[in-house]
Image (cartoon, rainbow, N blue to C red; front, side, top):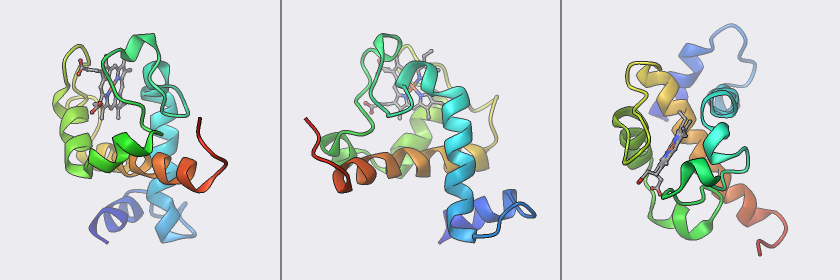
Length: 112
Ligand code: HEC
């Protein structure tokens, strides 16, 4: 897939498994840059008021990868855009990771 290919390119060298490479990098970036407000689990903290919970299957059902990339790049409401701080490749990897949060909680134990 295009996104994984980009991620694999970016992390070339450290990547043993092409498919998980982008996601791992995305997770590291997410935890560093986004978790302060959106929390590691994806549930919006007070500082991300107005944002949906990324681990909510209902949010995941309507959020597209393109939309996450756009909101992250350009910013949305009170959230600043990361277009100048992160490369498009990094933003894509983060978006892939954000999309993966919902499927994890859907597969895991029941969400209350
Ligand atoms: C300083 C706190 C803060 C940080 C850091 C932050 N966000 Fe946000 N984010 C917000 C707020 C507040 C909103 C709600 C904006 C609105 O619509 O009013 C939001 C909204 C979003 C949305 C849209 C959510 C929806 O309901 O559709 C996405 C996607 C998003 N953020 C991704 C990210 C990503 C990816 C990062 C890391 C690169 C990040 N955010 C970092 C505060 C933050």
